[in-house]
Image (cartoon, rainbow over all chains, first blue to last red; front, side, top):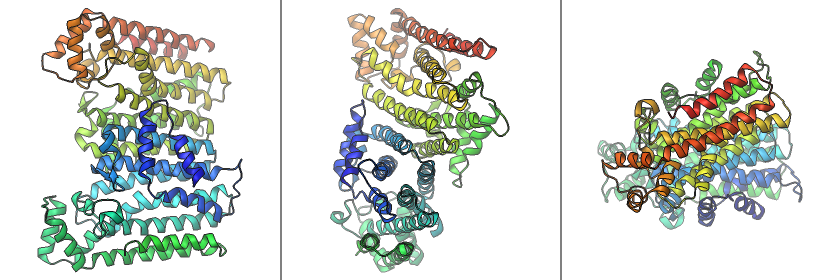
Length: 315
Length: 315
């Protein structure tokens, strides 16, 4: 991870000083670096031999983080967010214009990193994932404020916006290790299911956790009229009066200061968090199961524990 | 070009309907398709043999147009433009969020098209160009409202935002034809210089042409406080009173309805358009000169005429 962080900082360089400046803000904001970690872990699980000359996994891990960071920058513009991981978001500090353009730069840089890697297979995986992410983001925008969104549509959204990159991050790990197709597929399945579980829990936390734990304001999704499973479940299980409440705050976007605590009460009453976490557990189990084709090892156990931790952080 | 237009429409497809809808708006808005045309022309100049099986030039021409369209979508968001080629811009019709996200999709799709082409050399050229474009856009943003911007900085901006993609569009034409490095370099030089001339003239037209010719409102650049050569030249050659005028409208962004016609008067008085066009002619001559390593042909003459037309449209 140290080599990966170094690669991220080094590849953020540009003769245009604002780019590394904004990059430094993002690097300082930290984040879990979960996606590049998945690339490194997957490559090692597949027996990739890292040597001073052989550092493809590091370059690709950085590449994955660049794609992720580019989408975060654009997300914050689209969502008009002022906080990211508990700190001022880049658009709040540098403006929307800078966030759009530096996002484009990071996206282009990620493609330079793929090109430098030189594997057509890797490029196909990561460019396909990039297109799927954008489709997921557009679909999320289209379903915004719409309580008639079917759960399946919501699952498509989180598959696109989150699980596709988790899957690609894992899969390229198998590709650099030059392993049989079955291992690629298994790691893709691991990443997809981990990503689904991760996003479900994230969406649950937006109606449950306090700001310290989550690093962002609770109720952001509600304020944006975002359609997530907790809302769909609470709406589905709600009384006519409850449903009228959700229609007002989510569909019409008419919200008062008292609405968040009322919403949290309805979410609690209808067991919507439990419904969401239960579904996350199904994906988590599938992710762990996907690892079973690999021989037991400390790393495999660690990866399974990561899945568990992803779900358990909701408690 | 028909095959290229078909490829553009076909590759705009997505299971998320808003994407082809917004795509159709962009295709209907038309535009000159100058960049994909350059790829097709360059490949033919290099003797590329197009057959029903061999259509790499078409895929890459579409790819180049996707990169361009993605940057246009993001530009209009960043510039808060409501018109593009005389029609309502995509952000005005579909909103800024859709423009940011569909721009990301088109950008990702362009990388899928490169990957499908399969040449690492092509990928390096186009991913490098994409990064350079983003750097140029950031640099343009940073110089906005700043009349102390040196002309050299302005030239860097237009090299990044325009000439880099012109150069890449031409260069990949030579690559698909599998021609010696010298022809690649010549076409890169042709594209770079044509792109510089094109943008200089575009910037001149923003202070000269009427809306019908240009397909956009005259004075857009002034309203945005954009630093272009006509402004730098008029500022440089202006009286103390003139300079105070430019400082108010460009640096402070304080503009009244009467300011545009006063600005056009100052531009006229100082010969700033002629200064700009004269510089465009130098680049245009260099572009034509770059073609001289190719044997004389009707196509080569046509390409040289295109350069001439690019400059002459300013009259």
